[in-house]
Image (cartoon, rainbow, N blue to C red; front, side, top):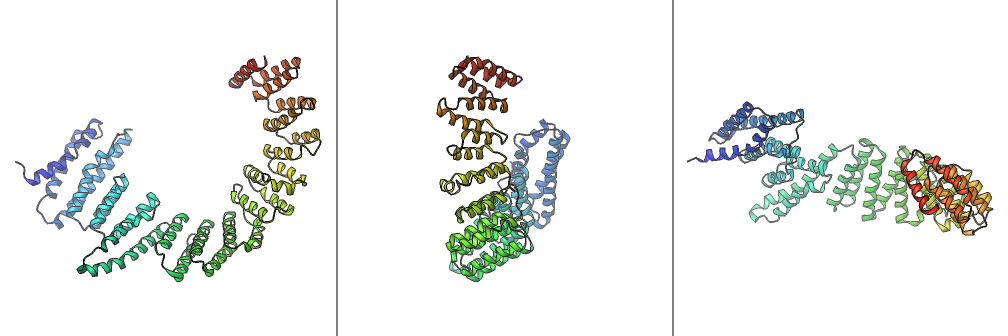
Length: 516
């Protein structure tokens, strides 16, 4: 009959069976190597479960942990070298995982062991949260473990709130302490906010070049210490400003500082906080770090608490030409739209916007003008300034969108032939603009037949590889009973679409269905 030590050793060795069988089957380890591993583990387990004092066992235990970690690295290397992929690598981690747990039971106050176990679980994603729970439920006064937990939450989950969940649980437990433990309770209450600050300062040190993380840290500090008073608010703002000035001197970091200040102002409505916001904006401008995004957010803040700030905002927006602008800066579009709205779409303001819009890519230019000309009130204000619409077409490289706006606005005011000739002189002309014009002319029945025929001819010449334009042209000729002209269009299509099997097949199918 086995004694207690032998039962323990047998239970531990059974954890390695599946792993060693797979490594043997895949020839990752040789038979000799497996025999040596089993023998080394057996010797270690006999020593670990012996009656020797713990201090005499610690070194041997840590040495065996190092051996097991090196063995895992060896297995990983051989699997990679032999291009082998295992369905479940975790079976090769079971033995070491249990030895860590055994060690925590025997050497319960060893910080190095705790951190090694956590590093192991984080590296192989072996339910690290459970391990943090296990350790902190027993050793909640270990500062280094709290810091490691906070670092893990922030790096892997980007969530600082979770890094103090257990601290809150600890505080709740402290509230239930017995009277004779009152001194410990007081110490815990003092310890709790100090621990939070310690964690936050640690994170600031490790993420001092990540604007988003720094901002989240300060937002958390502001929310958690929500009774800090005006002096506390000022200290918080000054601390983040110092980071902006000396550590993370970027436009994005200053933007987050503005966001923090305005959040604080919305809560306490302190004029001093608002004045600080204005000073920060001036500092950003003087530092050459001003961006359209900062300008847009700052201007909206000014307008949100006082409509009398409109003149100030307009003056700020009129300085946009002094800012370095990237061609994909969508916030420039937002700033210009805001300026136009505040200035009631004055002609001079539109012309100012035109000078800046050239700095953007075509897609953003089109979006700007589409939004501008989509407003009926704006159209009424600008309808007599044809030059502005022509300028919009040219600034968007003769885009279909602006041509369509221009055509729909002036089709009933100008000579149609002259209007269409001018629009089509601004190449390139997609089938979309032709469709817009043709669809309009067809509403007049026979009035514009000659013009329509010319348009169809121009369309097939400019959009030769679009099979639909040939079908539409022949359909029009068929409706006008101009059957003799159809074969010529058919021949043009066959020549233009040769070598394009899919398009040619679609053309022939449609021709047989609608024209033939």
